[in-house]
Image (cartoon, rainbow, N blue to C red; front, side):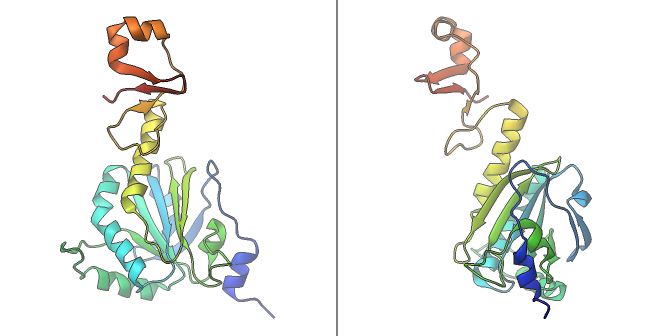
Length: 230
């Protein structure tokens, strides 16, 4: 007897780790055939998974993504959303969402791909089905992938809790900042806040006596060395 698709997907599925190459796949989407991540080139990518189309939490998430899609584009980020729903279901859902008014905002036409994964190919490659929760529906997964197609951040949320899209955007900005400036970001960092420097380039005496150094850097004890925001 051949096991159903969802059972096969769970037999040898694996969650890609931070620092690994993003698994590739080819699938049909609401924007045509997608070869992921290749078709998105050197852009950053975020791959979202959700349990089911036409459900309340998932609908709220897709609406929020549509409202924020231009902001992600400005960061050089391509978005893609995947579930086990069929392409026809995705298209019908997109049509419905494109007409919904939510939080007194005008609808924004969805401009990112929804991926048909009815055979659980993507679910298997990205470990998006967690057996203790469901044997047929994805959890809410998020994979942040950089321009070199390296997995940089991974999040999972339960079915009952919608994701904070602003936090996902903040994570992308933090990652891009740390890459560009060779710094770290502290807890609760927001764009424009001071950043941590991995190796403090000045002595305590220089920090105390040199106004130029003090204008740009400070210490918190001997554990944290900060560079002031520009």
